[in-house]
Image 1 (tube, rainbow, N blue to C red):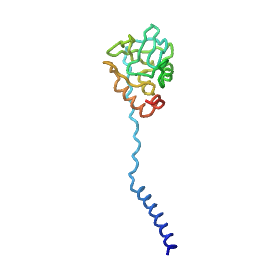
Image 2: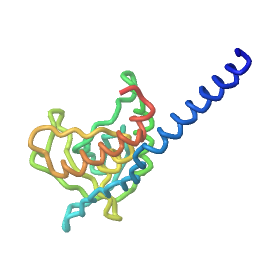
Image 3: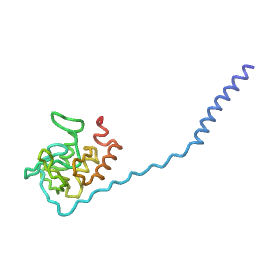
Image 4: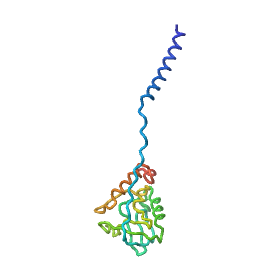
Length: 178
């Protein structure tokens, strides 16, 4: 009798497992179709902004103009460089240098508060093609969105761009332990 029982038990066990696997796959809900990312609204450069020429980029969120003005980019904060270097600070600086090489003519848009506590001019910086440098830094993971005081122009757009960059692990969001 044990000789007959062993093959029968093997059949029942294997058949039972196959039945569970089949039943599980048969009863699963179909996978939801992937959701297409929502395109981010790109701000439009206002007409009539003053222009200036870039002298050099100091770090990922600070630059100097040829007239000697030190500009701190609004709505962004990039990792530090130098003696207090942070992860992705050098990469953010190189990225901004690529966007704003010396001699680039840019358009400058101020917000409510024109200077920060260090006397730096606070601006949104536009490229000749109408793209917003501040937003590009956040979209590509080189900066985080930071709004201080009453300076809130483009807050929704910049924060949305940060959400997408964080979710995608872009730039510093994928390279650094944040």
